[in-house]
Image (cartoon, rainbow, N blue to C red; front, side, top):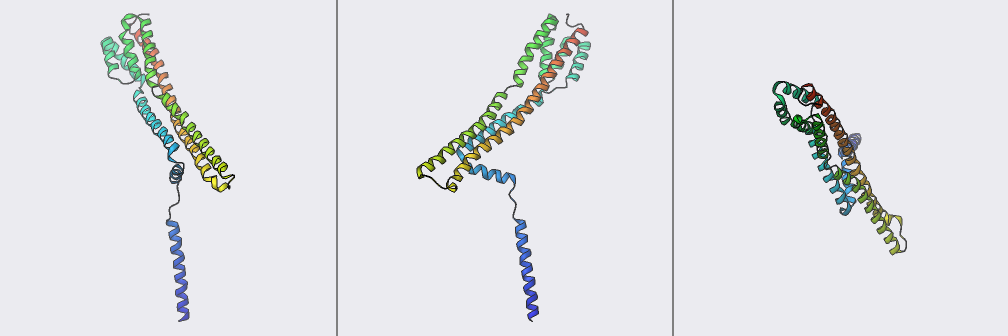
Length: 241
């Protein structure tokens, strides 16, 4: 009987150990998003809210620019071939119709150049250059605001840190000297604003550099396509040198 009770006790203890291990395994580990959210809450609503607003508005502008630039991207080689064929088959009006049916700044520049084709190649070049500047301005629209949020987010974070440090030293001065654990929380909260300000700036900076590279690519296509347009006009005798 004692042996049976002893075996039951051993099995019961083993079962409890397995149950405890299972409970420990089922407790979810703190992931990066969870820790980030908790740290954000610890940072306080004053400066954290402003830093979050910089991220939201900055990302909104980034998304708008990405959509616009993707829509502005054109297969310039294919467009030049279509314009060339239209000039051979239907003249300037047919080529202008091709440009009207094609979206993007390159097609708009082509249309302006074709519209001045009867005034000579010099006028076509001036028209292409002038309208190219207009299209470049549209491509860069909103980029200065993204740059503002990139600069503003870490500065707000630094301001929150400085204010937090001032409050910590005010506490020390008021109490005539305090223990480190009494002001550690205030200092941690102050530093969190800087951390999140830098995170926001880094995120927006990555997207900003991507947009700049995208704009440069489109501008290069515009310049190459403008030269190709002039060659096509001269080849088809539409504009005289």
